[in-house]
Image (cartoon, rainbow, N blue to C red; front, top):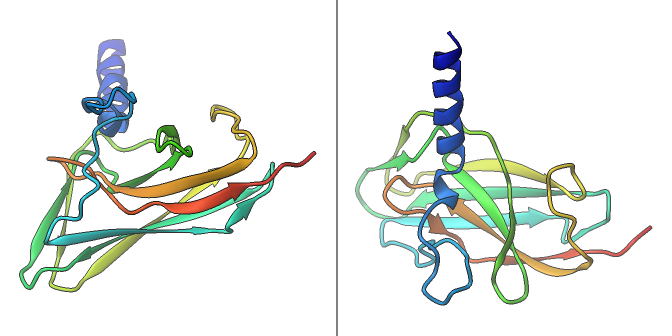
Amino acid sequence: MWMRTLATTAALAAACTSHTSSPTAADGSGSPTVDVSQPADVAVRVDASPAAVAPSGSLHIVVTVTNTDDERHVIEASSGCFTDFELLDARGDVVTRSLQLCPAMMASRTLDPGESFSETHVWKRGLRGMPELPAGTYRVRGILLARTSPVASEAVDVVLTPGG
């Protein structure tokens, strides 16, 4: 019984971190390689609110994936999660990710031409387990956790305000 539990836990951990275990960028930044170009058949967009987050505040992040092609497409995810997000510093280095738990199973979703789906994420500033980020301007980008290669949205600015 404990072996099955251990195997299930290991598979879940692997699925949850599959998008963070990709090769690092050639520039030596240590950031995983994520395709920031938009493929011809899909567009990934991120919206984040509020634009300024207080020390104990939350950032609501909506990642939208749209089929921009004139043919139906199947989006295959590397786990049970289709989207994620990353916060970037001024240099463009990833400073934190969602740390979401994803089911250890591949999933797929079919999008007709022009069809979209969105997933909402919440990042709580100062949440246990998250790095404590100093006040300043950061960028958030949405990630489509495509099985073959993650695809990132253009990043949008978010300000972490000082406070006490």
